[in-house]
Amino acid sequence: MGSCLSLALSAAWFSVGREDLPVSTLFVIPVYLLWKLPIYFKFFVQPQTRWLKTERDIEPEASKQ
Image 1 (cartoon, one colour):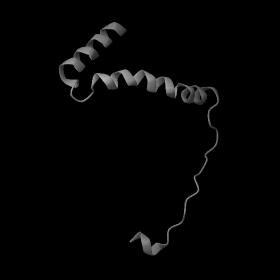
Image 2 (image 1 turned 180 degrees about the vertical axis):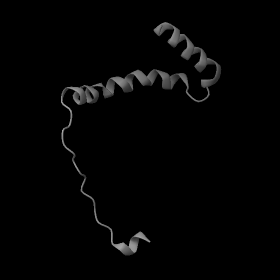
Image 3 (image 1 turned 30 degrees about the horizontal axis):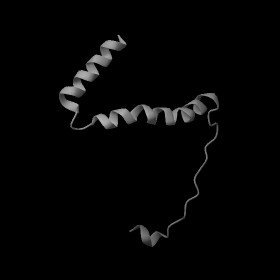
Image 4 (image 1 turned 180 degrees about the horizontal axis):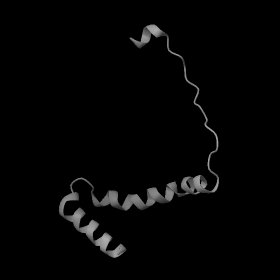
């Protein structure tokens, strides 16, 4: 089933996707996924349990208009 999906995606890319997604970009996708792997692993092994609110500057009411 995985090979059928790969074949279908390859055929679709070859017929209509080459202009929007060049081959050089396709080769970068696995590198990007490997770069993100530690973040995903940490999320599943040690998930964040509390909300960390970002400090923000308060704008005066006059500048919002």
